Image 1: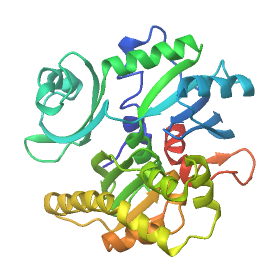
Image 2: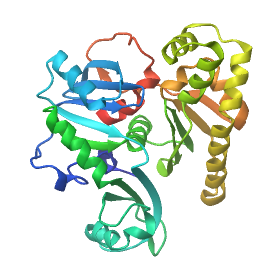
Image 3: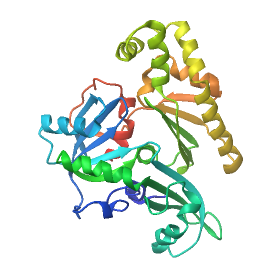
Image 4: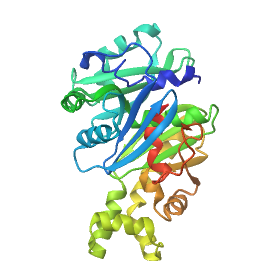
Length: 343
C-alpha cells in the first residue's frame, strides 16, 4: 500500500474532511504552525510544531477538564492563537476495515452513507464518518476500505468547549490513526507489526500487514486497573502509587499482580493475533509497546511471556525534528499518539 505522503490517513478523520459541517470557518491553506494535543485520561500531552519542527513539548495532568487544561497550557505559553489539532479515542469512536464493492472512487463515501447501519452500531444520522481506500486491488470485485466514525453529539459538544475556551481547532484525528501515521512515517515498508498503546483507561491495538493497516480496536483494560488494586493494598493514593511504581525497584509480588491484572489484556491481544493469522494468512512478528503504561518496570516481560512473541518498547519516531536536542522530562512512549498527530 502506498499513501501519498500519508496524507490519505492523516486527513481521514480531520475536520477538513470528516467534520467540515460542524465547523464554521476552516483554513484552506497548509498550516505551518500548530499545536497538537493528545487528550489522555491521565495526562494531556502537547507538541508545538512550526514548519515541521517541534519547538516545544509539554505534559499536564488531566484533572477532568481536558479542554480547559489544554487552553490553560496554550495561554501560559502564548500559543492560544495557534491552530490546534486534537486526537481522540473512546466508546464514541470506531474504525472498521472491510471489503467494499468497487464504485467510482469519488463516490465511495456517498455510497457508504446509504449502507452505514450495516457497519456501525451508532444511530443513523448521528454519526460523522469518513472512508479511505487502503487497497484498490484487494480483489476483482472489492476495494479494501478503512471506515472511521465518531458519534455526532460527542464532536458537537467538544467543539462547543473549544469555542468557549477560544481555541482555534483545525483538525481532529482518531488516536489509532495517529499511531498508524507514526509507524508508516518511519517505516515505509514494514513487516507484520502490532502496535499496543497501553494507556491509563484503555489499551489501543493496531495490526499492520506489510504496511497496510488491517485491524484497529480499543480494549477496556488500562494502567488504572493496576493502580486501583495497588492503591488499596498499599493504602496509598493513586498519585502516590503511580510515583512509587515508576521510581522504585520493582518487587516480585508487584510483577505477580501485574501478570494477574493484565492476563485479560493479553488474552484480548492474543485473540486479535489469532484473528489476523486466520484471516490474513500470516503472523504478527513483533509487538511494539508504547503509551504511558509502557514505562512500568517489567511490563515488557509480562506481555512477552503471556503472548510468546517478540515485544519491544516503541519510542517516538526518530524522524521528528526537535528544535533543540534535549532530554524530555517524561517518557517518550507517552508521546507516541501526539507525535503521530504532529506529522
